[in-house]
Every structure is written in structure tokens, then in C-alpha cells.
Image (cartoon, rainbow over all chains, first blue to last red; front, side, top):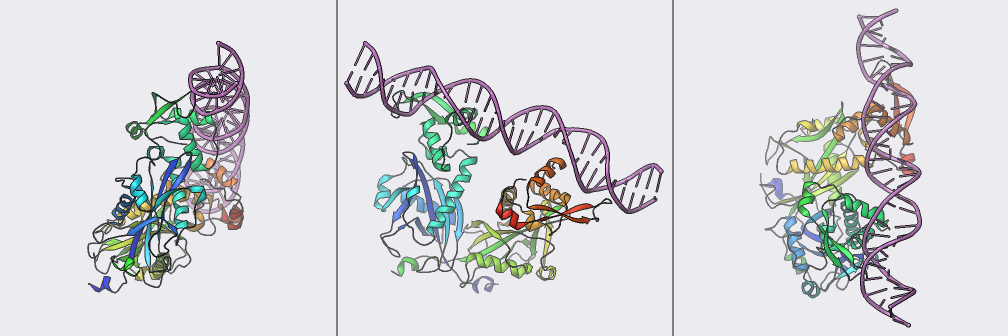
Length: 225
Length: 225
DNA sequence: AAAAGAAGTGTATCGAGTACACCTATGCCT
DNA sequence: AGGCATAGGTGTACTCGATACACTTCTTTT
């Protein structure tokens, strides 16, 4: 029964990536200054069209790689946007994906040559289409995720100080936390390991560097911050 | 720049609805026995194709209405499924939506003439394509939602007893709860109002009937069960 | 009038979350 | 060399929500 399908219309399907990073105490988003139509010159998320030979998830991975050079980054869908006129040029149904990346690991040149740049989350320019909405939804997803899983795995360098970790969580939740209570929590999580290395860049005294132990985490993934 | 779009392929886009109900102490799912190809004779979710003149969200509303007769039901996306071969007939990208409905309000005849029926959640038949996965994702969504919002608004009749409400939550979480603690929580939520009506069908003594007050809820949406 | 069956009700304990202030180690400046 | 500036590091008490737990009440049926 070929007509079961063929009486129905077909659509362009795209993916858009909301990519979070953390640097210098604040959350950043990877945005693109469009040097192509439509809406050339405005800011948008990094996106691309789904192709015949790839799943939608694979399309998101491909787009992320084309932009940052990063592979095997864990991405998650945050929603699908299907309003008839969301893209004024043509009807496009878009699936939004979000990822957390370590801002020092990606390929900086690749980002530059795409006209992309990291923008502080609390100071975003206007975005094209419904990208503003996508960012809001991704941010809600991010906060939900951050409270139940150690997102520091993704966002921080391999070695980090407790102050850096706390700054990250303060940025995610948008509020200050108590240093002693924060450290008390961290001490309970066996998978956040103290090393005997010292970071002297942040203070005169120097701060102990910590590291995530992914194996320990998998054995007892109790997390709460 | 017309080619910006037209160099890309187009796809069929469908919606699939995961519809939860609650009756006789257990959670139910609305399933369809397919009397059409592909996979005629197997069980599937209710789905349909997105059309040119409607948003994806609207398509989901339309499909739900065609099946149950219900309009203005709150539905939420639970995910988009885009594997290349998920539908063996043709490439179809499907957006899954979930809804909670009061099992006594929908149009029973309409459901029957679509070959649909309510199936207990703990006793599902095998489903076509990736519908099993969609159900699992919807169930996770449902449990998350149930713990932070009063889903009883949607699932129970207008008047209900506390025992019915507790049974609902026991079914959602799959575990028994303490009656006194449960009622202590409910008593704190001003928007769950005791009426002076009595239900005598469930016991000899009779149980007080309660009602949700949606306005009170909106003023102080503190909820936890 | 006794039995059966669900409705309804209160208290004590435990643990998690939160509030809160001072000393320490080192580099830098004078 | 000594003092000051700066971030790092540490412990306790209180409050509140979560949990465990058992008996009485009301009405119908026999």
C-alpha cells in the first residue's frame, strides 16, 4: 500500500545545537554570526539539515563536529520545533540538541573559521527564528541535568579546584552557595578525588586539585549538588 | 538563495501519541490494533502524518482528537525518533507526544471504531517499530511530571476519594505508600478540597469526596507527592 | 448484635539541608 | 624582614521535612 505514505507531504528537517561551555566563572553559549542567507548578519545557533543517509541524532553529531571538531560528545534532544512559519524562508522542522563541552578541548580555529564565538549566557544577542526559545528550553534541561548528574565531568578541565567547581554550580543555578556546605557535599562523593597536585594560579596559598573518577562514579552514582 | 534549502532532502514527519489513563487501580495506555499496512494486525501507538498547513504540535492534537474525540488536552513532546530504518516501509521521522486523560471523558465509540483499546501498562503486548521505546520514554516523563505537578487533575474524575488518589500515586511510582503520611501531605495542599459529598460505592462507611481547585493551585502551586 | 471492611487519625525519630565565622598558608609590597 | 592582602580550608547547632508505626470509627450485612 504505497499510498499510505505518498499521500502525505514531506518536509525539510534540520538540527540545531545548543552548546554550553564554562570559562572564567561564567556559562557560555556557542553562537554563530550568519554569513549566509536567510538572516545574514544575525546571530543563530549552529544548525544543518538532516540528510538521507543519517539518523537525526547522527546529523546533530555531524553538525557539532563540523563546528567544533569534537566527536563523541554526549548530546541530548531538548525538543522539536514544528511551527509552520518558524523559518520564514521555507517550512523547516527542527530538532534541537544540547551538549556540554570543555571549552579548552575544542578546535578553536575551526570555530573561528565558521564565524562562531562563545557568548556569555547572561548577555545574549537577539537570535533568529525561534532559537531564543530553544536556548531557554536547553537551559532548563541543563539545570535539571546538573542537579542529578555531575556535569563537571563535561565542563571542567581534568583537574580543577573546589572553588572552580563551586563557581560552576553557582553559575548554573544563578545563586551563591555556602562554601562549607558545598565542600561537605563534595566530600561525601567518593568519585570526586583529591590529588596531591596544587594549583597556584588562583591564589597565593594554592588550592588542591581534584579529579573525577568515572569508574567510581559508575559504581555508586549518588550525586546531589 | 533558494538552493540553501533545495539541495537538502525532505522527509515524511509523523506524530505518535502515548496516552495514559487511570482506571480500576491501574495505569492504562491507549493502543491501536492496526487494520492497515504496514504491520497490519500488530499493536501500535496512535499516529499520523504531519500536514502542510499545521504545526507538529497541531498535528498531535488532531490525531488525538481523531482517536478519542478529546480537544484541548495538554500534550507534551517526549522525544523525536529519527533512525534511518525505524519504519521499514519508508523513511519517517516521528515526534512522540504524551498526554494524560480522564478515562471516563473520552468518546468510547470513537475509540472502538478505530480498533483502539485501553491496555494495562504492566501487561503490554509487543509494539511495532520503536514504539516500545517511546512508551518507556513517555513513562519516565510521566513519573517526573507526577512528582512535581498534580496529575490527578487530568487522570481522575472531578470528585474522588483520597484512597483513589493514593491508588493513583501507588500505580505511578509502582510502590505502596503509608496512608497517614499520604493524607498528611494532601492536607497541606490547599487546592485539594474536601467536599461534603460522600462516596458509598467503595466501602460501607463511605468516604469523603475531594476536588481539585485549579485557581487555588495556580496561586500557590506547591506540590509534592 | 456481632462480624466484616474500608475510612480516618497523631506521635516520635532520623537525616538532610542550612546558617554561620575564624584560622591558615603563601606571595607581594614596603 | 615584617606585615598585609588574598584565597584556601575547616565544624557545629538548628530546623524542617520524611518516615515508621496501630488503633478506633462508622456503616452494612448476616
